[in-house]
Each structure stands twice: as C-alpha cells, then as structure tokens.
Image (tube, rainbow, N blue to C red):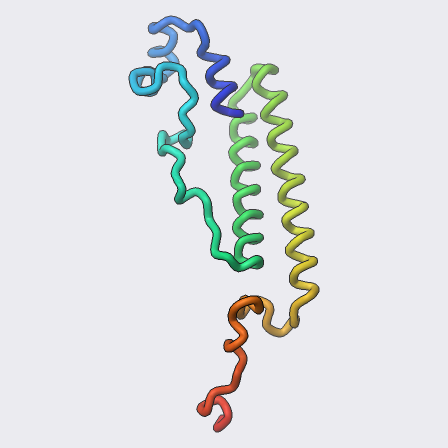
Length: 140
C-alpha cells in the first residue's frame, strides 16, 4: 500500500522533480513502478518472513513485526503533511495495532494451555524428550 501511495505521488512528475526529490536513482531502476524496498533501499526478500514452526516463537515474531511496522508508520507520519498520504497511513497504523493485539491474545491463549513452569523451554508438539530425565539428572 505504501508503494501504491508513492506511485500515486510520483505519477506525471517531471525528471527535474524526480531528481529534486532524490528519487532519481530509484527512477533509473524502476521508473515509478512499485518495488518493495525499505527506506534505505534494501529490497524485500524471503528473509523478511520468519517462521520457526513453534507457535510461541512465531507469535512473538509476528508481534515484533507488527510493532516494527507501526513504528515505520509513526515515522512516516512525523515527516508527512499531505492528507492524501496521512489518512491511509493512519489506517495502516491502526491495522498494525489491532494485529498486534490479536497476536497477543493468541499468545496468551496458547500459553494458558501449557505448563507455566516450562512453556518457554520447548515446543510440546515436537519436543516431548526435553523433560525426560537422563542418567545424569537422576544422580543429582
């Protein structure tokens, strides 16, 4: 959505305006096409998608991603004075807050079902051996 906003803002601009805005390097590579990248120019890639297959880990990762996105939208709002940009960014920011809350609720529901002494120690779906006593444990 941010890429679409940038596309709309650059539609019909002259080469001089593009250069003045500091978008000339981007324009050379992508014209005004939507190319998902960070503000520093780092392109989106699969490394941005984190999944460990452990519900607790993945929910924490998802919550962190929502907070990072919210912070990015906060930063955009700090620099922007265009209502046509501010309104959709505020919507996106609100969406991130709701997603964070829903992931948090799911994390709470999940951890409520686990043994509170060890729910960070292992994935009960796979790691049933984690708490079997070894010979060394039995001696101590």
